[in-house]
Image (tube, rainbow, N blue to C red):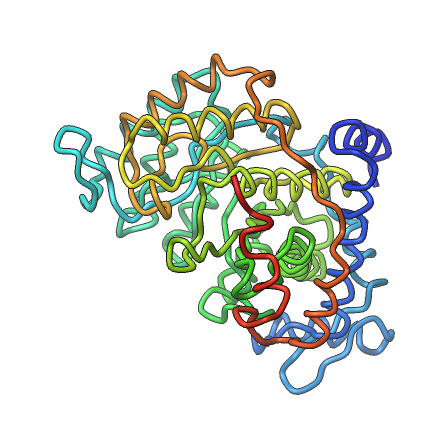
Length: 404
C-alpha cells in the first residue's frame, strides 16, 4: 500500500469511501478464492499448478482458484507507479472505435483509413495536454497500425497484439522506444479467460512487454448494481491477469485497466458513458489502484451523445473537471468518442483537447461519494457466476444510484 496516496485519497474522497475501496479489494480476493477463474490455456494452468503444491492455488474442473496469499505475493513483484513511464494525471487519446465520424456530413459509420490514424496520432503528438494515445480507431492490420502510431506520435502508446506479425512489430518498437504497452481483455465475465487471446497474452508477457489488462464488467448485467459490487468484479478480473503475468515473468510491468461500467435501463441496458456516476466509478477504481501502487488507466470524460452536440462537450468538460479535482494516473476516452465508443470524431477530439487545457477542478460538479453496500456480496454469494439483471439489488437500486 502507498501510505501517502491513502492519506491523499482520504482527504479527497472521505474516509468512509476509502474504507469502501479497501473492502472492494478484499471482496475481489474473495471472488478469486471462492469463485475462481475458468481457464484452459496450458501455460497459464501449469503456472498455477506449481503453486497448488504450496497451497496457494487450487485447480478443479477447468477453474483456477487463487488464494489471497498468492495474489498479495504477485502484487509485491508488480512494479509501481513511480517506476512506470507515464506520470500521474495523464490524459490519453485512447480506445478503439470501429468507425470514424464524418464531421462534415454529421454522420458516423465511416471506415477509418491509415491516413486517419496518422492524423489522429499527429494531433496527439502536438498537443501538450495529451500524454499518450491508444489506437483511436481500428485498422484491419495491427502491424500497419503500430507502425503508423510509432511514426507519428513520440509519446507513450498502447495497442493490441493478436497476431505473430503484430507481436514482432511491437517488439521492434519496444526495443527502440520502451514506452509502449499492449492491451488485452484477458478475461470476460463471469470470470472466464478469453481463450481467443490467452496464447498471445502469454507470448507478450514472456517477451517482456508491458501489459495493459482491461476488464469491463457491467453493473446490473455481469456485476452487482452498486458501486462496490461492480468495482470488486472488475478488480477481480484484472488481479487475475496481473497474477498470470507475475507467475510467468516476475517483475512484469502490468497496468490495471479495470473499466467498471453501468447498464442503464433507460438506454436498453447499454452502457451509459455520459453519467457522472460513470466518471466517479472509474475515478474510484483509479484511487484503489493508486493506493495499491499499481499503474492504472481508466475511462472518463465520455458521453452518451451520438453526435458532437453541445451536451457532448459539456459531458467532456465535467468529466475532465472531475478528473482534475480527484486525480488519477491515466485516463482514456476523454476527447473524441461518441455514444458507446463506436464513432471517433476528430473535430470533437480537437475541441475536447482545448477544453482539457482550460478546464479547472473548480468546475467539477458536486457529488456524494458512495459508501459500502453490504448487499453486493450477498448477491455475489447467491448468484456466483450468474448474471444480475433480475437480482433484487438491481431492481432496488434502479433510479437511486448511477444517476446524474
